[in-house]
Image (tube, rainbow, N blue to C red; front, side, top):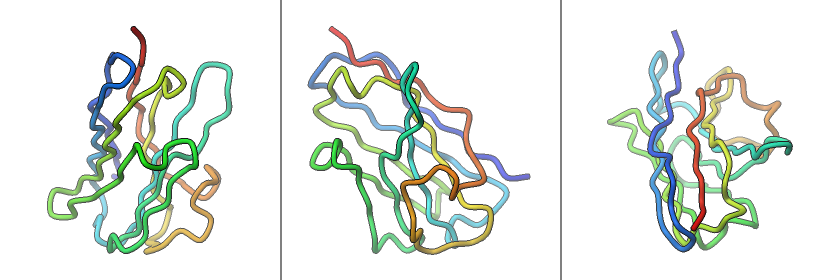
Length: 128
């Protein structure tokens, strides 16, 4: 059974940092690119970042470039999203996602429809 479980969310002040984790089970993380998305209240789900299976390609949304870093530890079956210099408009539920079949590099990484497996999400709130 495929499962993706996010953790690490919380309340942080503007300018602060959080590290999100996405632990996967039910498949070999070695073979899959993994994406991070977020959804704020009343807004569509938007892509944040994606990492290829061998960590040779990392994609970022323009809004998070230079502030967020995606990484992976296949030995721990975990993908991370380090978020620095957080802003109030980063407030959202953050989801990790995987394609339905092994894909090393997502050709279209920023469309939710390209992913079949999703975690339950973790809330990130940036507020003073």
